[in-house]
Image 1 (cartoon, rainbow over the protein chains, first blue to last red):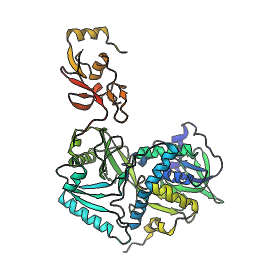
Image 2: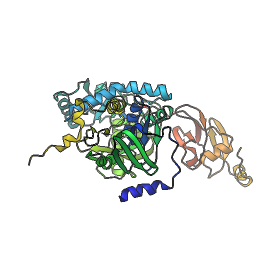
Image 3: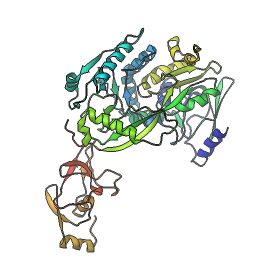
Image 4: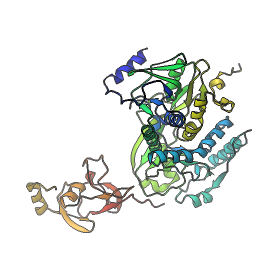
Length: 394
Length: 102
């Protein structure tokens, strides 16, 4: 209970929340206002009239404000072909979501789906990569897409300016990028336009289901809804317990280096290096098990990121670093997303993953309708937490 | 707009440092930042922004806002407010996003 008390006092002195459009019981409510929660809420609003999003304040762990913005397919699904299909379906739905958001808000979210690259710098990495991709794609039931191992010359034809050490890269036509900050803004602007009640500074302390209605306790009172979707990232573990869901997630830190804006030069993104629609460069893809520390960056990781980027594109050594940051990925026990409806509290769902950008379209256009229908179809069963309950052999 | 204080104006006259700004030679004084020298010489538009290419000049004068970017001796995107003047410096307006040659 001490945790709840602490949250209450953290927001106690803050200004009154913005007025709500809807005062009664919401048709559906999402806990979490990041990319996952916002995409789900946007999708819900296309189906029902009264939707609310409960969010924390600025001090929350904000994976959605620290990510790299890939809309990415290659490499995903080793050990779970269903995840490969799910990712692919989201990639295919992304243009539809971006267009819909643009209709409603007039905002562009920087979607570019012109293919993507995963670089390899040594012969060993080259061989490993071929082996990995062959293994991934030959899994029974795996989604199929075009991929190629580009050698040095083929890569140079596609990306002028690669460094002498670059051995090659895997390429697919299905990968791409978006601008994650613009995406988050577009979703929140859509909330405004479509009268979704976005309620910041509403950390949820307790959830109770009474006569089929969920009651969320917040510092600003009890908010009620017929359906609730847990999309609060790392906090899902704690909230899941309130509705009978055991959700094993942990933080995995990633750091990003940001370079100043330059004229557009890199039109095909690497998984580790990309140029934004407005010219800044992001270098990323570090992975650290470092607990809940998202406020610091460290030289060993940053130096490694910078080193690999300069080896990939030597011209970048002249380009200045303007920012760096870290954020916490929301990793499940096996790294795959979790989607499930509570058996003990029907109407309560969980949606959590570490690819909130890639999967935004699937969350808005597939998960949200399933929530309104009241059931996840059988095809979604690989994503339930039941996969964590398998007995381990002694 | 901005003028030098009379006592500093005097140093400009007695011990001038010459810079070239967009091809125009102007005098300033030792210890000036490039941004101060440009403002004192009447240049308020330092650059055109990287995305929409609209004019901007210094806002913070302390290295934070990145609105005072200029080209110095051929080096793009230099912070004028964080750079001291040197005799013979060649300063040019930063026209949009810098180029990187692959």
